[in-house]
Amino acid sequence: MTKELIAGFEQFKKRQYESDGGIMLRLIAEGQKPDYMIISCIDSRTNPGTIFQAPPGTFFGHKAMGAIVRPYQQGTALSATLQFAIRYNDVRKIIILGHTGCGAIRALIENMQDDEISSFIKLARTSLDKARQSCANPDDIQELQRKTEEEIVLQSAKNLETYPAVRAALDAGTMTIMPWLFCMEEGALYGYQDSSGAFEKITGADDAAPFATGCCHA
Ligand SMILES: [Zn+2]
Image (tube, rainbow, N blue to C red; front, top):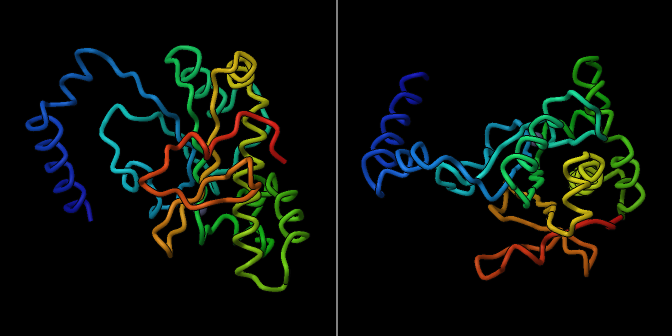
């Protein structure tokens, strides 16, 4: 397994140091200035660097099970990361990237009995309750899972607003929060659209801005 990782590293080195103008060397000399912060799930299939084919210097990253953002608490990994990204590096676009087939959300639905895991994912219980209410058939596990995945992305976007650095940038009118969902099965990206109140497919022709929300969604 490590052999695959080392081979990948060699490719990365060739591409980013030795061709394309040596982007890494430029970023080292000039410093980084990422436009985005992406909060994503720990899932090994949904790594944003992979699915967005993002070159170095594109985004700050933070990962958590289910891409769940808890309400603000001082001293957490996420609060420090947001402070660093927003206050000291002028990041003004945050993507919350949930995904379908999420194991964390399945664990929430199935009420997994593991104190370490359940004590974190229970933060999203209100999203599960909300999803149950909006399902045509709450006994349909697939429908419930998809709705819950969407609700958790929205709840996380809402919770993000409680972080001081995010709040300050929102109040200044300079922050955009984008609640997105990667559908693994379709190979499609969905963004929450404030105007329709639903997740809609994002295509290459779209500017990401319409799939963003500053505040005030449900
Ligand atoms: Zn996941």
